[in-house]
Length: 266
Ligand SMILES: [Zn+2]
Image 1 (cartoon, rainbow, N blue to C red):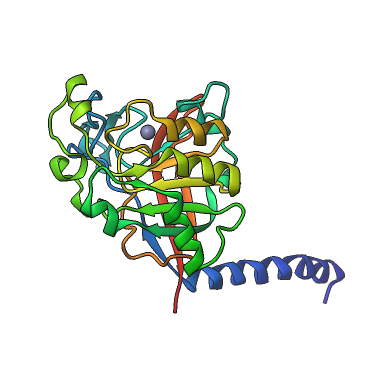
Image 2 (cartoon, rainbow, N blue to C red):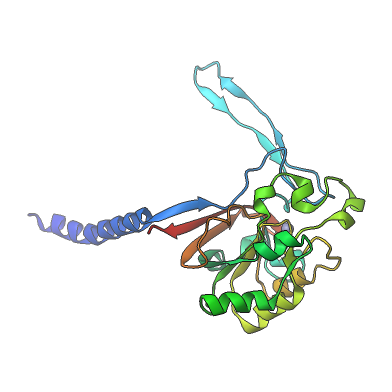
């Protein structure tokens, strides 16, 4: 065999083996979509306009091929989206500057649905996390914490999901949905080292919050939040990976988020 070919093979083979092992690794996992689709029903804060799809051309062009393209309009915060730390903390990370390592990694689901479905104003407590840790493991460093309040199945019914279908500034006082208690946010920041947190309601602070303290506490520590996350019901409590990749808006305070879970097959 010509010497050059041998060298080329030697360089190529480890790459091939690596590609195959990555493909095998992926094949051992089931992908779960944790994002709601954007459409006219997508839930935004009562003070925001909803998602607007401006339909463009769709059809056969005069050259004979099919072509379709639309435009869209959206607030940063609506639907399944990311809150960047700068949303409530001056000088902290914007969407484009959050390290990818904080958006992709091992994740856990803390199920508080029994408490939250019984009380729309429920706030997740330190005791909820301590109970989870007693049952499973201490929250690992660098983990992504997902709170399952059990509200995702109500989407897009605004009355059941956020407590009102009224719009405008006056509707904000009518919001009722569960969130994270500020004491628990402080505990996560001071006692644990999580990379990100998410939940299946429109805000990491509960609907009746007026000062959004959990936002302030988490974002001061550069811990971003994922909101209106979907499909948490089918996930295991731990032992899986999440990839949460928002639209990369330079300087953005938040943005539409495609979040998926990699669940190891049995
Ligand atoms: Zn937000």
